[in-house]
Length: 350
Image 1 (spheres, rainbow, N blue to C red):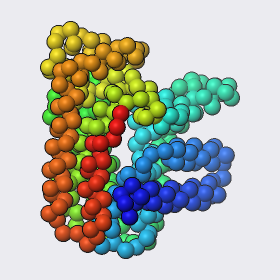
Image 2: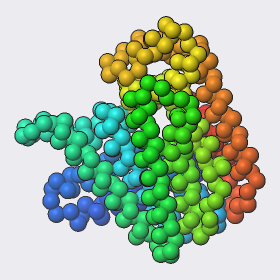
Image 3: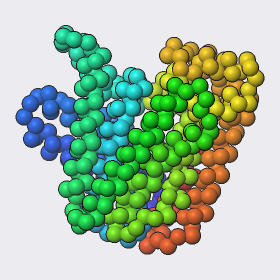
Image 4: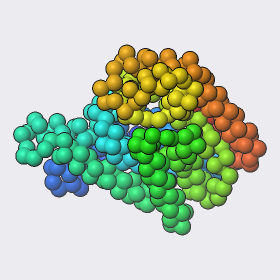
């Protein structure tokens, strides 16, 4: 199976499992508000995304000899963890859109306004979204713990999943501080990407699959961490240079949120005083304009910051592939997929 075909196949299987889970979950909810929350979570979870974390969990499992199709059910838990984290992330970033549609707190805020409820619409929306995110986390644990694997392997997997969430939290802390601190260096950013993206998106899912295959995941971080950091570097490039249609949110979002990406850090280091002034006027400005965005884009190109990010991502991908080629696996097709994926992570277009 070709890599893109494999991604499409497992994406479909994971989504089928999620639909079935939500169908059964809604049957047991007695109050309309609980069913409503479940429906909103279902729509939010299924509205888009490549299901890369779930797919990597399946790939890690099969690469190390796993044969049980129950891995598809177990892997779908990661899509609910993704919803849990994204819903809370949307609140922290004050984002109105996620994948081109209303964020969960915005859905509830509009519901409050439409129905004329008492109290503050924004507060209501954020409160309900926090609860919805917590429910997504509980649903994820339910799916993983009820999957048909030996109990001792599930315990190890749940322990690993909690570790993934823990380090994602540490990454989020660094992320929030990055917007508040005047000085935020490249090494701080790379640690942020290691915790918030590489461990969560690549290393964690692969390790979970390997654990459920009954193997030890030691060493897989030598592939996963550099690929994960490269993925985030490319994501930041797309965030600054992409289109609203392509990234599913306003193109000014990263600047408005004050995100100190490697693009911004190196442009501030290498730019003139006037360049730094232009960047700082746009960074963290909720009213940043498209004209300001274009000026920042030009500075990032001219200072060599864009090339620096691209070259670092490429170097990391090559290191990851070299490691993966040297390890023993039981399914070569899955290794080939991971080699393809490493290149794909930095070839996504803007």
